[in-house]
Length: 468
Image 1 (cartoon, rainbow, N blue to C red):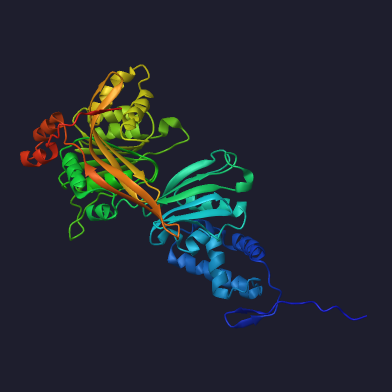
Image 2: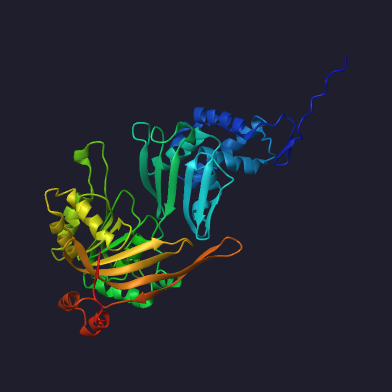
């Protein structure tokens, strides 16, 4: 009886050395080498934070294992490629770091809707990636690794977390039981490029008109408080950070951000000496609520530093009441929050503040918010991915349940067109509708604004104020 002939795959070339052993699926090799590395180099893996020496050592260990065990992948990868892939899966961020996704030109966001459903958003739009995690558990392991390097823990007891990955990149994560087991883990890695923006870039991108930005610069320099409303990714923090960066270095700035720092307002001279007066702070979570430091507590600390301008990022709760108190006592305050329109921002401010003072009447709180934040800047990310200041309003009073305001600037959408390649373009323009009120004009003069500059912003048009 003839002996059956077994079909074998071609030998695998590992850096010039031919191995005739049977090739394996990548997942099998990864599982075996993970066991080997954890048994022999667990400390090096757990303590690795990206330093070159440890990376070189780990890569050498991986290559040594592959050679000694004549391990080869059935996709034909050579030694260098296979080593690189294994290294990133075991010690780094898997395909995220291997492909350099976070450093890509135009990178905006990487979303994991499931372990095998990854989408990339860039300045040119979004697309689904062919590269995914190998399975739900690998997705969990890699994302936990990313968080642990920032000192953040996520598990079944605390299945939601967010943190800072550095370079202005923020990560938000959720895992079972608040998402389905088969999904593994969901995440959003978003780049907030707030420190590389300029007036020229804002104008070039169509975010605002030059005269509009000049007006905002005058207002913030004269300590006129303003709130930035809009959805996630609308550019609120970017615009606020740019405005703060335009202030003279004599101004003492105090910033309050939640968990991860996006803004860097430190300025240095040609000798690297710090010339700005800036204090950056972050909230701190704790399993013991008494040990946690929230935005309200940081605001109390800020007031003891005698700042000229306070920046409060992403108001979500009762801190709104403390912020308006600061704004109504002579401090310039810039704050961001999620809202759906410019006028609706006041209602959102009021409902947040009511969490701190539930017995206060709505009318009283609304009047306080209008006094605290006379200027609202509403921003939006449009269908073509562009971020626009859609409207700048000045509220004058609250009467008969309505906010009486004037629209200073607005962005008018003329049309939205889609070409044959599916590329969307929003066509529109920024226009000035009205000048600031006499009340705000007088405040600018009292705060040291040259009358000639204030006159340009005043220029009353005779238009009636709007209601909302």
